[in-house]
Amino acid sequence: FGPGGNYYFEFEINSFSEIALVFTNSTTLPVTWLSVTGEINNGKSLIKWSTASESNTRSFTVEHSVDGLTFVAVHNTSAAGNSNSVRRYEWMHASLKTGTNYYRIKQTDKDGRYSYSKIVVLQYWKNGMPMVLAPNPTRNQLTVWLPESSGGSTIRIFNQLGQVMQQQQVAIGTTQLQVNTSQLQPGYYRLQLLQAGNTQSLPFIKQ
Figure (cartoon, rainbow, N blue to C red):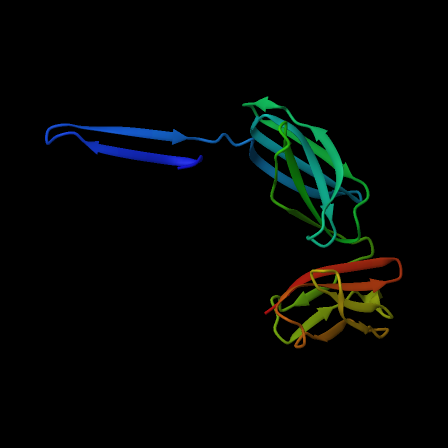
């Protein structure tokens, strides 16, 4: 039958009585998450997480990504081990990037097994308002609204492998741009605005 799950066996003895055997194999979750949140504070990311209970936990690792696909470990802290009370943790990331920042918490058990929290997405812009794109998902065309200071920059579209699929220059004074997406295959992409001293990036889906 294998581990995991509940099983119920019933055997009929006679017309007046019967016997039942119940087997239950329950698995204790290593962590019961209460919350995972983030906020921008004075140009830094404050990442907070809390647990309602922990069983055999060894550590928590904060992982950071700029594209939502590839994550890098940026901080590690010890876990409670075993706890049935609320535990709260937090960490400040001083090296966040301009644009979109993704964070998740990797929880590792003492036996080496691990799991991940939900992903927290934070936007950080040190040079004014960010760009906006629509519609998302899109089919044949994206409209991109650009910051006023983005003239003379470059628009690039990357696929999930990090390959540049399209590229076009942005003329000085342009605040709205039409991007043709009809030649892209359906899937997940990232549109990047590259300008001197500042890079902004937004994901979109091509249907």
